[in-house]
Length: 335
Image (cartoon, rainbow, N blue to C red; front, top):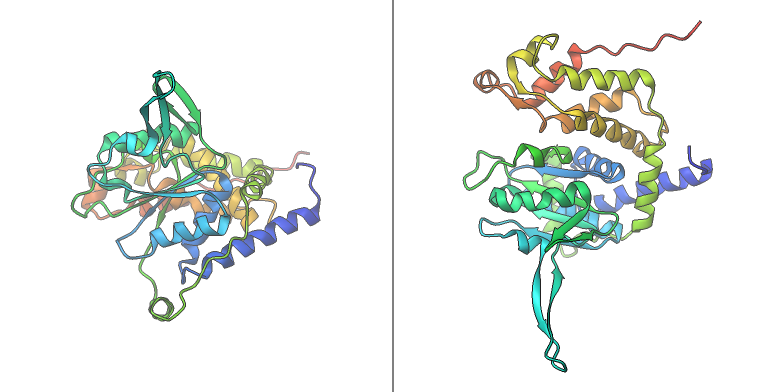
């Protein structure tokens, strides 16, 4: 562990409780979604939120930006959006004193801490691909020069289900850059009642700012120090390897999966499990953390076969079958 006292750790964990409460002042319900979004934040990854329009995906991300006191930008992705609209462009400037002309790079909205890529799958692949380098390398290359993005940097993208007209499927390489694929479902009857009461009253809920960027970076470092046992490490390795169809793979995988998850899935699952443990006030990850996050981490990393589509099997069904098929073997004590 890093040189940090138990009291300091508890203080940081209390701040996470304040952050969750702050978001809850604007968001009714959606507890699992808020938790997964905070896990992505702590693990330093990017999140993809999927759900039909009107479920509060954009409000949720905006509330997170307000609660974190971070620089926040929103880009509405449309079919005519160009890569330069996100990354920035070069402007020709003239010095009126000397008449000298030179190009100056005008930074785009991606130069921020928290980027909301709204309806990402409504823009063509060329523009979607402009996010790739920024998401992985946290840099932007333009005109032969590389520019560093601010730290911390998160892309929180929303997309509508692909069955809707006018959407472009995200490329596999870009989907793999998202730590979590978060599903946003319809609220319960009580939650919907509370939403209507809160949003049609005289005073909608305001989100207080409770955390700064430096605190987010400190928590991200703390996540890396959360204990992850050797038996869990081997289990995650075997789960990810078993997701690839071939000899030795579980029957459901051979039948329903065309293309399995890569090593980044294992990295993401371990970091997300550590972040979930910290979010719940623990300094060691458990089997439950892995089971809870296997779906959000792996559902967008599996390419399902025609048989899965024909039999109505979803990626979540396949991931659940995968976790059941690969047993956790506890490490035997020596001697």
